[in-house]
Length: 211
Length: 211
DNA sequence: CTGCAAAGTTGCAGTTTATGCATAAAAATC
DNA sequence: GATTTTTATGCATAAACTGCAACTTTGCAG
Image (cartoon, rainbow over all chains, first blue to last red; front, side):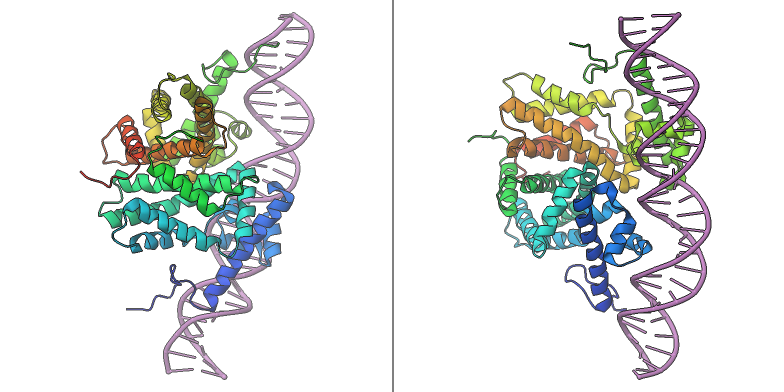
């Protein structure tokens, strides 16, 4: 049995090499978002981004498959972490509650350091609908993992309707919450928005607005 | 007051010009999907697609913003139709029922002629996840309209949580239904799958699998 | 701490995607 | 049937992306 030469996606880095990789990826992502926020999407080239991050343009493509990816692609390990969180919740919790808790934890931690950057990212993404699509696509990968986690938890196969649907619905709820969060005149914190959306979902969407 | 020179997005074409445009768009879309299904995504260039559809490559880009768009972009009028359907449902229906009926009608009509092509498209998209982004982009546009229709129907603003969330959740349910539909070993017709998913949603996702 | 293997970076050449602009063809309008 | 708007196309050009072959850095074992 060999030692695993890769970083553990759940517990974080594992040596200088991995740390540098994360730094480079983060630097590229940050440069991409801030530059586009400043100048606009098509006034920023991959070369610009690479320069700002102090790497060659060729290296950019070692990290991101496209310019859009750099702007919108989420942490590639997020899905795996999310899945682990779901299966790790106490056994007595129902699936909806477990997923709720897991998602909240993951998002809170993900945003921990970089709330500012995330807000900026959301604003940029909303300004360019092509990017919104990329975000969804990224979310889709996480959604798959989430569905797998749910399936594992309740003893279903990953192609059953229930896990797929619950994962998709939660993903949709998060999307809506993010959109409202990025709305400049909505002061509610993201965690509350997510909670509100998930509660509405769990209530079956039967209740129109009220209030 | 001028006459509207454009085709009515809800009721269909309005003269030779519009018919030709639809034909060209359809031909390009069909060529793109079938070629990629045959040869694989990167063995097909925009030039190939254009040749197959008998137009110049430059014309291709008058219809689609990108190669991906030709593979994954839905009918650009679908969102408007969907919205009209939602507001047109009988007033006594609740929002969930109205949306359910509207979505079912739209999808049924959309697939009417081209069930085969749609299935092929789904398979292609599943094979190349990059395309998922474009699919979501299209879905997102429709989702906006759907949310607007719901808001109009229940007298809410389009930035309220309920319309956004209902639209997003329904969109998610449809996505899941499509995925299962494209599964080669699932013989259930699309309409049933959508109904099943929406019922689960309306039940609040509280019920794990059963069965 | 030295040397070897694995992984990461970079430059370069070449293809494909995508857009602006000018012109010709087609169709709607009167 | 003349005009006026829309659409199609060719050309030029920029930017996005990929494969390949050096070269550098890091990990690791002796």
